[in-house]
Length: 168
Image 1: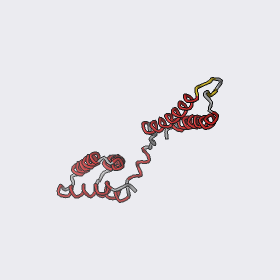
Image 2: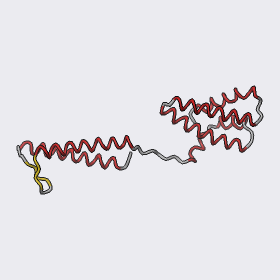
Image 3: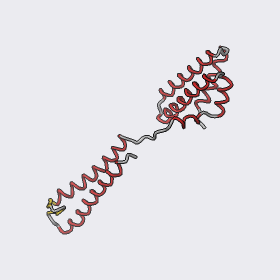
Image 4: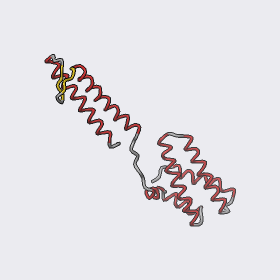
């Protein structure tokens, strides 16, 4: 929650309840003026302005929360643990070479993070683009390692099935 939202909401609630209290208390006495901080205000004007401004501040605080949500900042170190043990085994058995593995692991971490975010947001176009991009990266990596061309398609599909699952 944005730190200013509770403050604005509290001020709005205080104004609203002050207006209600004056309305209830002075309404029975049929007074025409309200004395507030050594100034005299018209009864109707004071009550409506306090109640309306209180409601407006509460609504503004809700709108501020929708406009400026506080996003949690995730460190890059937390993304390293997203690769499951099954996927690590599959990658190590298919992709040989340390530099290719670290490059692919970074790409897979990024893919899994963005893919899960796109699934949460319900963005089908983004998920399909991410799948195509990752399949292309895996295919080119396998081609660079002189993998048999008739097996590349099945290996790409097998790895992509692992990647589409939620991380452990």
